[in-house]
Image (cartoon, rainbow, N blue to C red):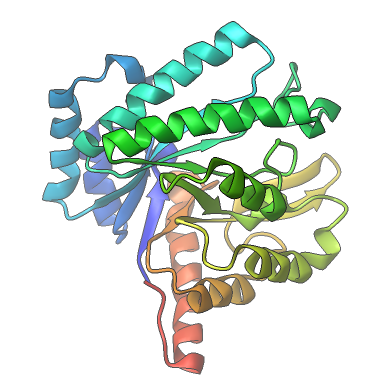
Length: 287
């Protein structure tokens, strides 16, 4: 099993310090947030030389940059803001190879002006779907030319809110540069929280092996709704989840997220225990 971390939990460090810290934690990969020492790098201002310098720092430590964080609301109802963000994402897709990565992770986003992480009835309209599909198709054309890939991460309150819409987007865009993040915690709601096993089984039955990166976090219902937590801290059935990944033939890293720096070792050890248990019972391994 290869483990990595989303580096938004390590944003207080320089790039070299992030790479060193990831190595110290016994991890092998990152989903890289281009934010260091509390400052975000504007993607359109990245130069090829700067990208290669960052990539070299991770390569020296033997740390794979499995993906870049390119989160953007692709259906933002503010059209000027949406277009500006898409232009930034285009630049990141073009820079990915220089950063030592192939995949750039984003999301479909949503139409809720106050909070795109909350539902909105316009997320379900064909008009919104068409805008998303056309935007993703254009980004995938850029990715194909650049030798990179665009990965969408679903979320229950977004336009791409589950495996059916992931499949529909795959069929309608039809680009080899399009991929998906498997992150079942994002799909847990107050309505399905008592049947997460069914949720997991449905995900794998619908997607098969059509996912390119795996995120490991957890979900737990509470008074304020479903909270997202570190893996092993909620209700997700991790033996079932990791077993499904294994059966699908996934060989990439598992990306730890939704945990602060101090909590990474606990989540790492939890995942390693589950992985070792699965390997022992089935004679196989993850990654």
